[in-house]
Amino acid sequence: MKHKIAFITGVTGQDGSYLAEFLLNKNYIVHGIRRINSNNNLNNLKKILNSKKRNRFKLHYGDITDSTNLHKILSKVRPQEVYNLAAQSHVHVSFQIPEYTHNVNAFGCLKLLEAIKNLKINCKFYQASTSELFGNNGNKFQSEKTPFTPISPYSISKLYAFNLVNYYKHQGMFACNGILFNHESPRRGDSFVTQKIINAALRIKNKSNETLKLGNLYAKRDWGYAKEYVIYMWKMLQLKKPENLVIANGKTYSVKEFVNKVFLKLDMPIKWQGKGIKEIGINKLNNKILVKIDPYYFRKIELNNLYGDASKAKKLIEFNPKVSLDQLIDIMIEKKDIDI
Ligand code: NAP
Ligand code: F7E
Image (tube, rainbow, N blue to C red; front, side, top):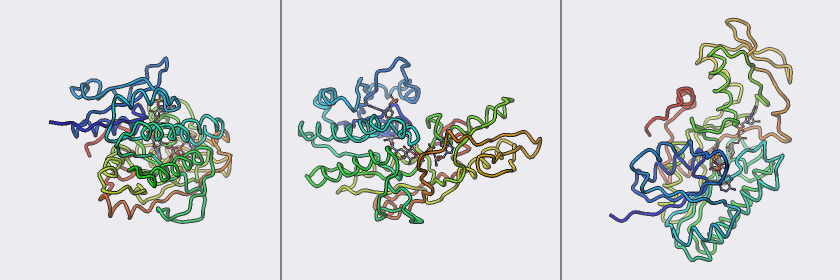
């Protein structure tokens, strides 16, 4: 049987690893790039590396900022589908390293697209774009028609890539942007708010004396399940013509609501006291302080509200997310993915 060939940047990350598993299950040959570092960070790929599918999975040392390397790999692999998931993906950190963030997220995408074009590779191209593009534009819901008003170095770099993808599409390439709203999983990086809250709550449950320190409790996010969202990356590349699509659960919750849910599930119901940076979350059962505010985690500019309208994806790719926020929290507390 002839296998399709996919190439994934960011394959060691949350989404890249789930996508690789999904494509291997669909009988693809999957190539990915990993950055050289001294920690040998392949944790998210353990499932693949320990399975028989490993012989259809090829890891190359590489970096999205290194065009010579991209050329070398792509000229050999000549994939039919390319998924660009590599990114400096942390919004808060992007305020501290804006140039690096652009080198990876904006110019990395350019280098990849140029390599594909110059090598005349006939592939379909998926770009992991983001709801961060919307910024604070006052719209209650955000859809493909909502104007972009990016407010962080991260979102500005992603807008550059978004526009690039449209530009190559107009030149005849099958290239599209998934406008992804927040999505989480047991593989979510430790410093993103959901994983940070869950890990701290689990340690406190296991008798740690720490207090969880957070920034803005009132930001609202539309959270989904990463393992589920990657399926729709693939589905977007199976369309006859490229479309930019919002991928969102269509429900929004504040960080504070997320905290309440997690601690309640672990039998530590919270009551809140105080205001602003003096606000604290206290265990109703024993009055222990569980949560404090630390201004370090405030952003220069905060994106207040994300609430996605994925009607177009529902229509075109039968987008139908099944995992609710409560289920997602259970999955993350158990640190065990579910079958989708
Ligand atoms: P992630 O866990 O942070 O993964 C990022 C991946 O990019 C990692 O594999 C990382 O490699 C790789 N990477 C970073 N810099 C690189 C470079 N210079 N060259 C090559 N690879 C590099 O992110 P994620 O949550 O899976 O997100 C995947 C993509 O979706 C990202 O583009 C992100 O911006 C976008 N996105 C995510 C969300 C979300 O809620 N998760 C929402 C919207 C959009 P290392 O392992 O070496 O660090
Ligand atoms: O923050 C607030 C913070 O860092 C969520 C990335 O995948 O999704 C992600 O970006 C909210 C923000 O994700 C802490 O201010 C409060 O309002 O988990 P986060 P993010 O910034 O929404 C988008 C769609 C992407 O594209 C990105 O790649 O939580 N918050 N206290 C905190 N956030 C963090 N990280 N840490 C805190 O202590």
